[in-house]
Length: 459
Image: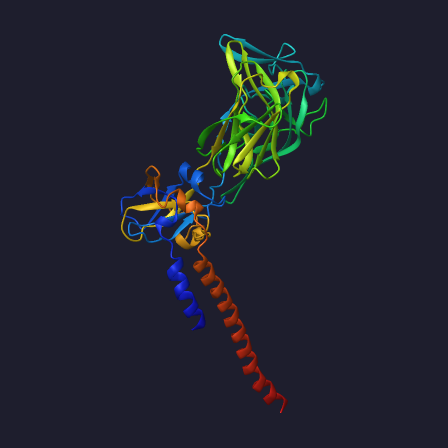
């Protein structure tokens, strides 16, 4: 009863209303669903007073607070790479010739590509043997890390160890895999097979597949040659970049020569940056630093080289830089002055972030709105699992997407400078003390109830 008596007036006076927040962003929904998700617009980051967005709320058309939760940032996704078929050529040698001594040459004749081995690559007699396969990977443009093979076999069981070497010029070879098994066994209607060879990513134009157990002058494994029918390579999974919002910030001069400051205006969750240079043929080493307030020291988040060059009539600029996720408002570019730095021009900072989302319950009547900008507000969001049951399940529940309208004023800038409400703080203090008193009373009551029981046992 003590707790209820203290809690009732505190809740009544502390109930938040839209006018307690400086800004609002209307939300458009179709009204057919119970839950909606909406991207947090850029204006929210400029108006909040907390880096954790703890002063963000969602209200309905009657000014009532509705349940909402921030969505966790989506995990990075990747797209499995598809195998790409490659060409292969058999390499025949005589029994006295070691594989390392074979001279290979790729030639094109009459529209066909052939491989010559010291001027001859034909099995002209029983003295010639299949020593290896030359695999032409071609120009993939990216590293590959799996060689996948298929073959024709005469028996139901096949097992062999192969060796893979790599080369870019058919002259110098390096070991890719010294010993890898290829297996295909059919038994009782079941198949056991191993036809993939994995290795560290590489870009070699050519691969040489030979028998790992072969020795110079001898057959590798009698009557068990590898009769290839297909070959392909597979690259590593392709990372899929999430769409980002971008903002361009102009620099102002820093305290020292070669320093440029950028004010983002709010705690945007920046994870990509790009430095825009004005003068052509500029190249410089730079450090990128951040801080939350002007009173804090700078912290370095990146050390890199930025450039803008013209080569063969084409302009080349330094790529986007991944910096992790930083919500600091102030950024500093510190340029090494060797080579003249950036000249007399001022750079720009292009900052990108993955839009965050919040989920809210469409309780009550529209229009709904996001409210923000309150120095006294404490975090009021629910965990995502509370608002969206089954959120952690696979597949994740799909929610309809709501749309936002332009920002408008609610309580206005005066809310940000409003002095603390002493009555509210007094009531919260009384509430806290009431909870402490209630806990103490419960503890004493429990002790008093335990005393007769202990006395009875002793008697």
